[in-house]
Length: 157
Image (cartoon, rainbow, N blue to C red):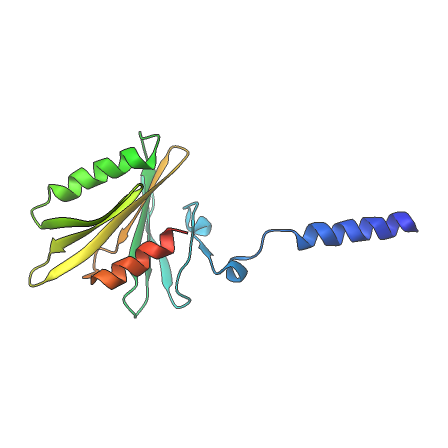
């Protein structure tokens, strides 16, 4: 009888120490979309896989200005810092680029000139195995700085 009680107590202990669900942590996982990351997202976002193949893309949006694109593809880089420098070179060489607003070890926030106003975007890079995951503002986002800072905070968890 004591073996059964001991076994039951151990089962309860193991189950109670298991990983919390996404909603308990306040995190949303993108694993079911093929991208192995978790983000701290607003509850009202719409998440859609927009492409698959050599590059997987997931768009995350809501009506309150949250508009992020997550891209994942093969990489030759061993660290996020090396991948960041390549991303940075591409951005800095774009004629619409104005300046780097904030620079991080694994990404940066920048300012660029839209048709009639200054807008903001970011790049945040994670390397997972041989995959490079790039977080950035959505392609239709004409984002003010505070919206970009909000999106950037959701990936830096």
